[in-house]
Image (cartoon, rainbow, N blue to C red; front, side, top):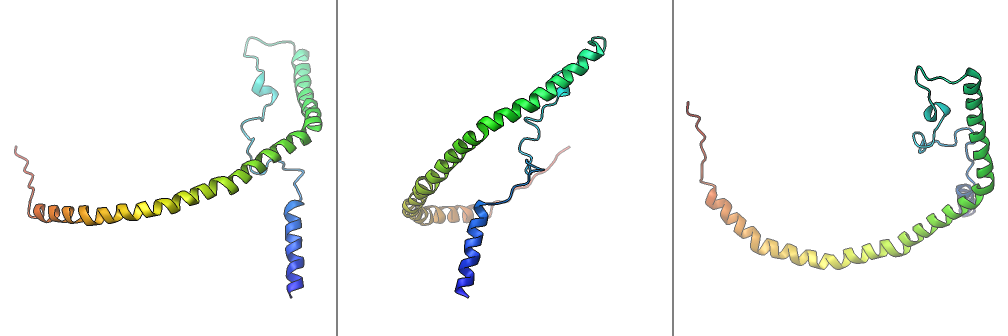
Length: 150
């Protein structure tokens, strides 16, 4: 039973690093939906009364679309893996700092302020609670009546 558990655990760890990716939907969380989705119509538009020749407009559309497509492909082929390596390194450093520096500092701060918190609470309960209780009893007999005179 323990061997089966270890085998399943190894598969789970292995699967978390070799997760299959969707080659069709490459933005499943739609983080780039509004930002970099730029088509020809989003960049170049001719208002009524100012139109170029139809052939020029079609050639411009084709040139824009094809050059954007291939330029992105070439840039991602050349720089995609190195930039992914840099981003992976950056987020690994951020995670490392958060796990090994930020959270221990926060935990240490919470432990150290717990003593001050208890002393503050003791002072409030000792001095302020009786004061406000007495003030409440003093003003509990006060009645306010609002009259609207016409």
